[in-house]
Image (cartoon, rainbow, N blue to C red; front, top):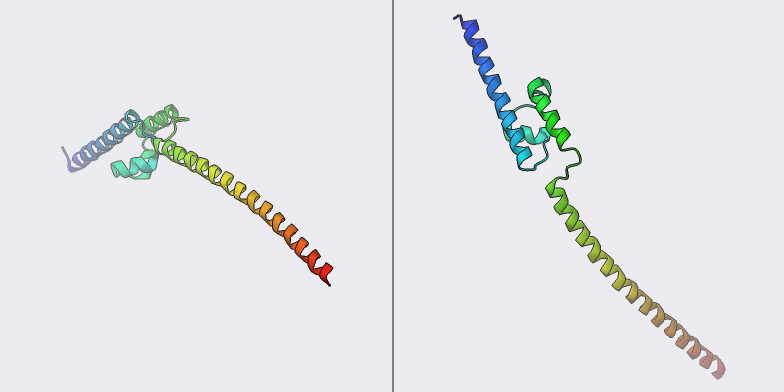
Length: 127
């Protein structure tokens, strides 16, 4: 076997290992219900973005995984949505309280204006 053949064999072995790693990571992410994305795969595998786009075997598996997950909601997003809903409820309650306080202040302002008008009228009568 020549050096060239050994080098080709070694490169093919490394390529198969990368494909196996990518395949295993994609399947693990799907089993765990985690949304499969290229940036997440890059972080978990250490493989380049180009590898996921250029390798046909991995690209097909990736496309299938993404197709199966169409419409899937990221669990973290669901938690954030719940937190935001709670925040909205609190803000609505606070707004209701503030509107009540505003109405009370308007009524008090009207009472004070009437009292001031009476006082001014009394002062004018005295003159």
